[in-house]
Length: 80
Image 1 (cartoon, rainbow, N blue to C red):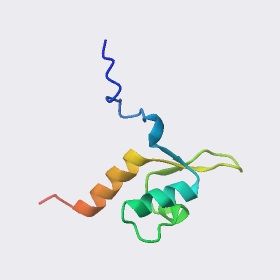
Image 2: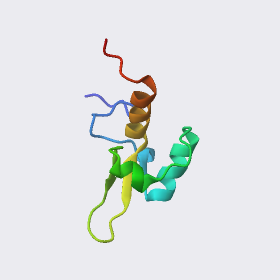
Image 3: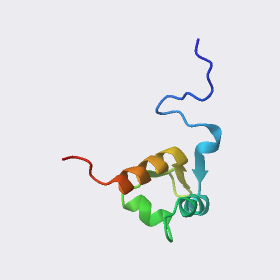
């Protein structure tokens, strides 16, 4: 039995990984160097930002998935 708490399946997120609502998402992206992030615009642009659904739904994002998306953007197309 594997009990290493640092290993997670692709779908699992550690407790501190989840960002809920636009403010915390934008604050996190600012710490990662994104100038003037707008979570609603980024969601519409295809960033890994979801919605909890319904009329009162809140934006939701994983720090890990945002970091991975930023890494892809900064590396650019590596296909030769």
